[in-house]
Length: 180
Image (tube, rainbow, N blue to C red; front, side):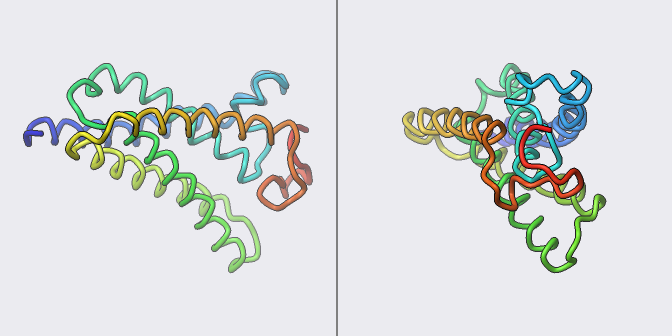
């Protein structure tokens, strides 16, 4: 990949940080803006648990990726795999850093939550862009990536409607698991 295309990929990664942040902000409130329409809960957060906030990464990233693909997808290597890696890195960072600070601080801090989201978004986008600059990976990586995204979407939806009674599914502000 030549340096001009590589630069273009990283420009889109930076644009993606802003684009995904905007989409995610709107996504965060969609459940309540739809008068708590239960069906939409499969793809938008229904409460303020960590689990539900994983949807604020997955779906805005997928929306931005669809738009972005039109401009850089054909000019890069490993696009689908790179986006999948970016999403899973973001989810792992958010979960790990949130619970680390939560157990140290003993409480949830909104500014810390937002900072964790933004930090994970930056790191995920940059790692995804970096993977796009690799030599082409075997084609089956794309199939595995798609399967992982579909599995993630299914698991997120299933546990929205049937949450286990463990911390990751608990909205401490509302005192609920899953749908209100």
